[in-house]
Image: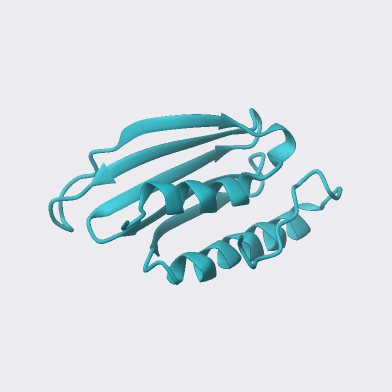
Length: 121
């Protein structure tokens, strides 16, 4: 469904540098695809030295999704927020946790959840 190349972190034993490149390429691929849905990046934090943990906030209009990857536990958490205006504090509501052993499919799960939860139809 998505045109980006996505490898799980278990496909290769990666150095921290290669893991960072893999992460950034995967995120860039997701963003290219989501751009077709008018979904854009609002925030991104990545910690390659801390189990590859990252946080990604994407959205459209006043709706946002926050994905938090906890690499040590292999858990992807998803939270949702609707912002009445751009300066309002983030009223995040936890939506779901996904267990993805060894990071298998983490980027595909982010893309899929984003399209499902922010669909305009």
